[in-house]
Image 1: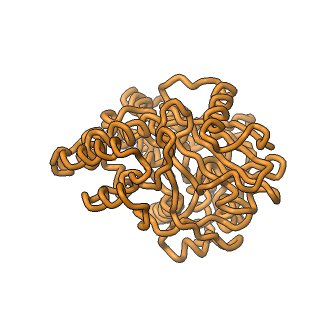
Image 2: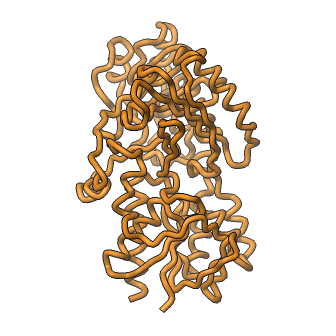
Image 3: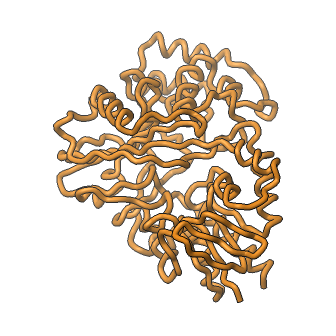
Length: 429
C-alpha cells in the first residue's frame, strides 16, 4: 500500500502526522528546509536565539497546552504591550490609552470619536469604513490607517472585514475619556495570558509532535502528478503516495501541478499576501528591551512591530545580554528594497527612537520570508475557494495557515492539521 505523504514540516504537517500515528497509520513528512518547524522554527547566532517572526501560544484547550509543554514548562506573560507614535509611548490598545498625547491631539481624537459615523457593522464591507465607524476619522487616519499600510502593505479600503473578529478592541466613550486623562490600569487585549517555552525557543512546543515522526529534510517538491500520485523533488528523487496532505502556500502548490485550468491559475495568482524581513538584534547589555512587544505607527520607520526574545524567555540570550527582533512587511506585488538598505535604515531609526546605541549591538541579522500574512482583500474568499475546490478534485488535502489560506493562530494551525488527518482517515479507511 502506498504511504501517506505530507508536504511541509511546520505545525500543521507535524500535527497531521502525529494524529495519524496515534491511529496507527504511518505517514512521511517532506520538508524543503534543513530543519523541521516551518515558521515556528528558530536560529541561533553567537548564543542569541531568534524565532522566525513573533510567536506566543494562547491555546484555550488544556490538552493542547499539555502537548505544547511536553518538552518543558511554558512561561506565562500578561499581554502588556506598547505603541510608538511620533515620539510618544502609549500602552496598547492606543485608542484606550491616549494619556501621553498632547491635549490638542487628544481633543481631535475624542471629537472624531464622538462624531463618528453610525453604521451597523453588518452593513460595512471595507476596512476603511470599519475603522472610521469604530474610532472616528482622526484616530483612524493617524493610527490604524498608517499601521495597515505598514503591516498589510495595503490601503484599508482594499481589505474586507471578516478577519478582524476580536483582534481589535472597540472602545466605549467612557473608556476613551478615561484613558485620555488617567494612566492605564485595565488590559483590553484579546487574551488574558500569552505562553512561551521556558527553554528552546518557540519551536520546542512542537517537540512532542516531531518525536517519532518520519521526516525527510531538504526535500523541496518541484512537481506533483496527481494522475499517477507521485511527487518529484529538487534533488532528483521522487515518491509515490496513497494520500497527499500539503501545507504549502496555495499559489505554490498550484505551480507544481500539470494542466491546471486557467481560471484556477488566475485565482491562485490573485491570492494576496505579505512577505517581509526579520531583523534580529543581540545586545551586550541586559536591559535594552523595555516591552515584550510594541507597534510602530510612524511610516518613516520601517518595522511595523518589534518584540523582545529575551523577555519572552531569558533562555534566548547569553547571560547579561538582551535582544530585539523587528518585522518589516511588504505586499507580495510591491517592490522589496535590498536587505542591507532595510537593515541600515531600521538600525538608524530604532537608534533615533532611543532604544539603543550602536555600541550596544553584539549581533545583527536580517532574513527574508516570502510568506508572512494572508491578505484579506475583497476577492479572497472566491479565489481561495476556487483553488481549494480544485485541489480537492485532485484528492489533495490542503491544510494550515497557507494551505487553507486563513488567519490561523498557532493552535488553530495545529487543530487544522489534526482535523485534516481525521478527514483522511475517515475517507480512506
